[in-house]
Amino acid sequence: MIYDAIKTGYRLLDTAAAYMNEEATGRGVARTIADGLVSREDLFITTKVWVQDIKTEETAYEAVKTSLKKLDMSYVNLVLLHQPMGDYFAESTRDKATLGKHEV
Picture 1 (cartoon, rainbow, N blue to C red):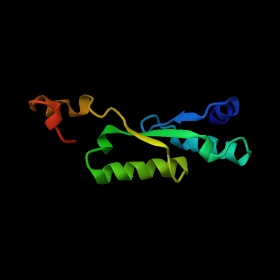
Picture 2 (picture 1 turned 45 degrees about the vertical axis):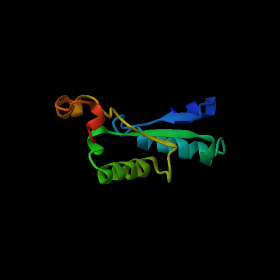
Picture 3 (picture 1 turned 135 degrees about the vertical axis):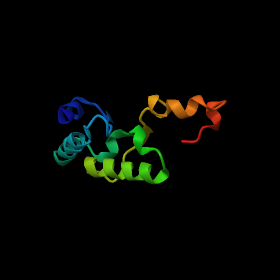
Picture 4 (picture 1 turned 90 degrees about the horizontal axis):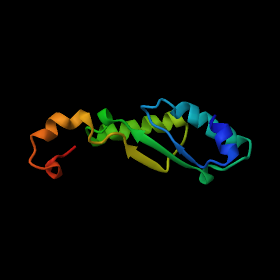
């Protein structure tokens, strides 16, 4: 599917650890590069760090490294925080006077 998308003209690819599509995306990208359809620089690849992995700088860093390994890439163009303030942190933020004081 990734191969066909890139062949059709897609250049922005959206992945996420939670989608469990990073390995398949990496394989599709590698195949299109190997076939000479695109270079890595032609693509904009986004992935997302899941909410439980943003507790500390270390856990976020490890999550990004894991995503890069699954993608079999040395870099992605954008890393987003998946659901940065959703239900996961709801209990801890209710007690704060403002969200601006909440440190994640």
